[in-house]
Length: 154
Image (tube, rainbow, N blue to C red; front, side):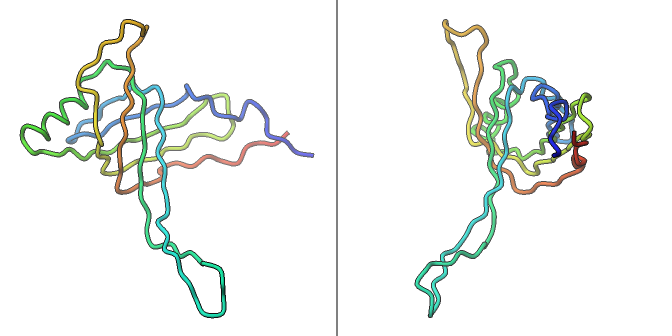
């Protein structure tokens, strides 16, 4: 019987994220957690001869969230540019999962046209050892630049 070797699981710390913002590559070293999801939009379809409701995919939507350490003003400045100048920033995020212990290699996903929903503009917390903030976002496209290989089974 085959099994997944523990060494082939991917450590959550073995990754990188880069923001491609206004033509600049920004290493997003401050990311603690990032998660992006694709969700199908479906329409309910009722047809003659069937009592049940069927479902048809009619589109998709991309959304995500990230928890970051409160050590950058980058996203606050983006929000201020929108509030004060009407300039809404869309940018790409490249997420790389690559654990050198694993035999599966790396996966690189690029989220295109990321747009922030909101940011924390100021924060204090006397009970926190390290300030963090949660940021929700949407994105308009996605590409997979690199794919994991199949693991070597035990």
